[in-house]
Length: 298
Ligand code: CDT
Image (cartoon, rainbow, N blue to C red; front, side, top):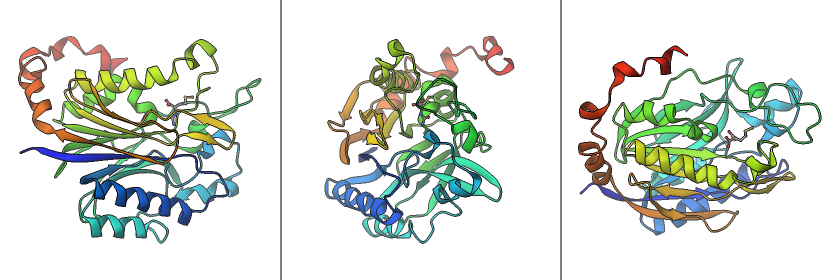
């Protein structure tokens, strides 16, 4: 049997004044709820330990409080300990400082709380400098450099698994890089403001574009996708919820109802993806990679 119960722990807002301890306490509560509902793995959001600080211009000194120098660390150890005690693996995103380099990072742990995969966000949205005339900013290119670890996958108790982060979910290359390595499930956290494009006609479709990206990515790559939002009204920025678990059929099997802390669960059958990969999406039989050169040359 290749089935297990998977949870997504959506998070409501984290304000700048909220300390790590209060955030970890919320996560531990959701970890316990997920476990009580039978879950063996929990997906937390992107940058899940602090407020979404790339909305602001911060000095080098000011920005330091938002990065983790190691993982786990004193603040996050209780989450790792509780997950290990419950035998639950997890995905979580955080801002990483590695020497003098800064990344938007996510890790996956096994059921013993050991980190088995690390991913650094490759598609960084927004700008390095504020755009004149806008009253909200998205400055990820200021605070992070593009990830330098590629798109790793890991053979785990949760299937062959990969991680990606927020804006990555809009790019077909992300899913393809994982599925070409046999990934059966992808975990993603996100922070998506409702006004993120500053074009009203696009912004009006923010929830739809989230769903569209996740469902298409899952189906076209015969993968399960579990997506966790940090959402709600955070420091004046309204962010979408709509955390969801999507099957390799492209169907949504669980979806959050709120824009606060909320656990959703679904039974994940890895056999479903394997069936798609033997039929309509048998890559070896049906793909024509010799025709795809442009994808990597421009
Ligand atoms: N965190 C993140 O990547 N958010 C982006 C929205 C901002 S685009 C300027 C996203 O793609 O959801």
